Image 1: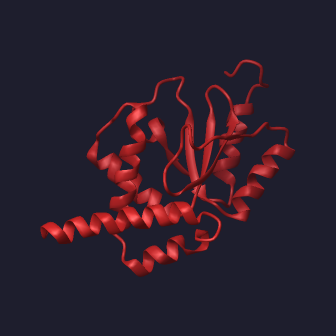
Image 2: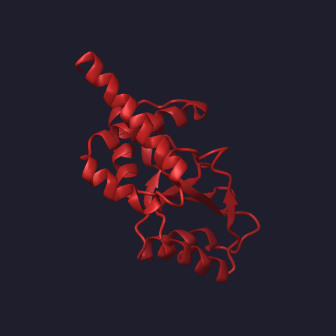
Image 3: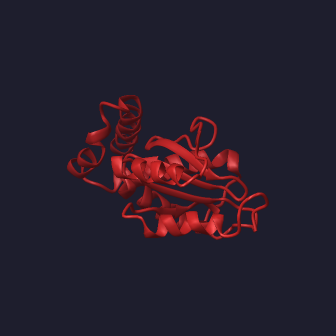
Length: 175
């Protein structure tokens, strides 16, 4: 039970996520299997008008939703915004440029079964995102990221630069 909230409040948000037309992907400790009773529920979804309207509907239903600084916690090259819907345990929703890339990266992390401390998780995600992008053809990658090149050009350019550098190193050493 969450203190200070009506019974069922927390479950109402999880049910709204489940019932939404927006595709939400569970991630974080609850997905990777290292959650505790106090762990947040972390989700990501495609950054679309429909996803933002979903958050507006939750606000209209009386839920407080705060924007989380992605620089402090969720900074990776394809996350555009992050919102906390409920505190303790939190329900965090990250908006991403490509759920396809993020889902592949999440599966890479799951299969490698490497659990790093929170302060190192950023680097772990970055490597998995690069690997996920590297598994796609240039045409598919451009299609995934193109809608965000104007609004998030710095992030897209940084990701593409890392990919080019990675590919150059592979070509340089013949790997």
